[in-house]
Figure 1 (spheres, chains in turn purple, blue):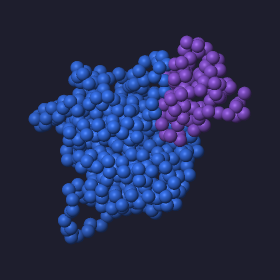
Figure 2: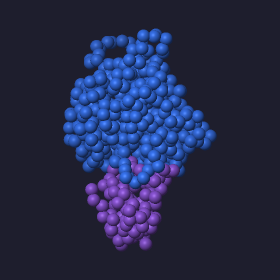
Figure 3: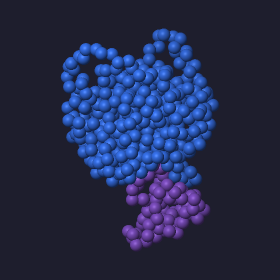
Figure 4: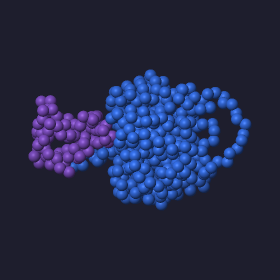
Length: 95
Length: 416
């Protein structure tokens, strides 16, 4: 499982996110699988993926330090692996 | 029949979490993740183990408009999807209208059916939707094993429905099997059937609920079969879904994929055809009745404020199981299985893999004072159900005229 922090990502269009006190629940209508975001910070990263040119930039914007980055990279890799997030081509960017 | 959602691998095992997710879920969520909604008690079949004792329609069933109001509430609460069942939900004349209404309002639908209405045209329509999933019920990999439980002809009906779905290009619909003593030897054959039709196999646990209480002793898996099932599930890993059905088997070793938590009133619940809200689909009994969607405040208020649900969201104490080294794996098992076999809620599951359930049942059986609770609601056909033990001798008896339409056919009045 590898993940490219320098590419542009987004929450998959078929994924519904529901904020919860502990983070968020995600449900993918295509794979019909449920997943979770276990804290508010990773939720902030995932929510803002589509506002940034790369996943790395999204992490930096919510204050993830270089030391913390590998943990977030692994978390995003798991989400990418289950297609909860998907790559986006830059011209799709909202920004 | 579905209880819990199927869970993708946990998203961030390495990012600091405020606690174990199971501990957070144990305290309940502001809205269910998914819920089971039995749309009607009417059914063309009379399965011997029916959880909801279905057969005849209930005249008080929710109207189309009342159902749509429930869907509006689920949309507001951001419930991801509903597991629609019954009875046989597709015999409701407004079934497709309600499915469309739900998906148009961001509430996904997975519905369970015996396949009776899954024609080629319906299959094509289902294959075209991203937000509808179908679950075909089949309880034997051969007609002999299946029809003994679900009734004559039901195997052929299910196979035809799966062939229609496959021909329409519907990939990954579910083949749903309730595991019994008779079909556990057919695990590989079920997988082969699912593969043949491009379906995903989903195995669930037999519960002593509804009419299931009457056949539990003959149908529930033997202890050695439970181990066989556990080993088979472990070897298939994520390929086979279980809806968190078998968390009581986790005490055999490593946990099976899923939450491994009783979700009743915490992350799931049941709405029955007349709008009654129960803690789970396996507990249609007044002791687990939280309210009705027709009450002031509707489903939202029942979910958030019912005394019963508040109570179920308190942390488990473990009771008699607390000192058992496997309690963290199985968490005492299934509430409904305990209740309908007459065992205390804070004791072992009747199918406890450490054997404590059997001991408890034997002890309870020794004292005839212990009464096993009966289901409070019964809509069974007023005819004999299919015999689980092979052919029934044909007897010519004078036919009583039905007292009203509903006695004659579950489909009476539906124009079906």
